[in-house]
Length: 123
Image (tube, one colour):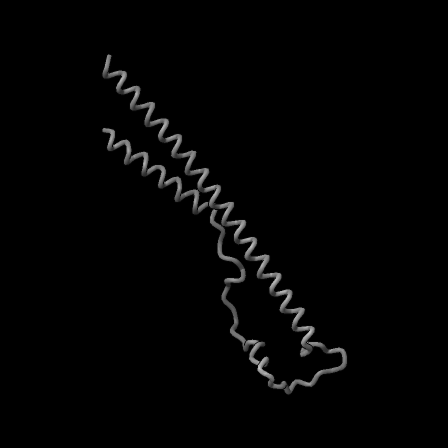
């Protein structure tokens, strides 16, 4: 009987853990979405010149403008990474707490039932 109880409690703990993990796991980020494949801007960084004429005030080919774009991209990436890490940590904590609570409750119930049965048999 005790072996059966252990399997039931273990199965409940695993099931609750899986449900908690799936419930708190975020979906894929928007940056992971598929899209159109285009030529990389870095393909021109080897010193080749472009044939696109520039107008006065047009800074699309200016190195300073590209540095700003790269800085913005780096900031976006850092923000995304920090958000992902924080989300993962929060999810892990929530899952651990839910699993611990479920384990404690299941263990307490199983212990109480086993104690009650043993007490009844001893009478």
